[in-house]
Image (tube, rainbow, N blue to C red; front, side, top):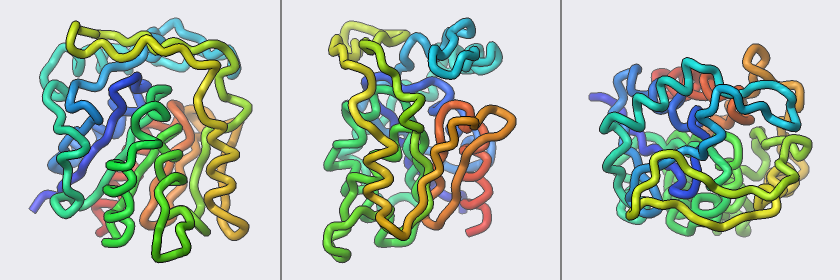
Length: 253
């Protein structure tokens, strides 16, 4: 029987490839994939993440390959992402793994979402695969285990964290592609990202954990860490290898 995977995405700005790459990898591998968002609405990418000419001002290179942008447009124009369930309606007992996808909207409605924490804690306690990329790792940090003095579920583990040196330092608006009147995202503007993720994650793993925040990571030298039950990935450059590692681990179980 095909393994069942629950994929979570923000309603306030996914980074396109951080959803597309693991989604396509899991689907191609033959897993039964269910998409869930906080509002039960189609997850939409921030516009800069489907612009092939967008150059990251901190890393100084174009981060969105044209072929990725083309594939994301196919997904947006198609039906695969059209009807996600609400995260609040998901039951971890129905799935073999939970996979979190990234994007600047993730701190707004995923990382701090009690419903997400409930799913993650249940997955952790029942020894199921947990994946997170980029800022979605914050949700792992904020999920606390009452059986371990409310330490994070990643306490003592090896995980990634979006490097503090890469955190946007400019006012960030969440301009989405493909909005509709009933799926318009948010007009909030934040002073960069909402969380200093590397610091949060370093605190969460404690003195015996390890955080990989490699500022030299790129599409050739990616940053994906596997420490059961967690597969974590640094940022967009590691999206493809994140998907590959999720498939590899699921196939090994």
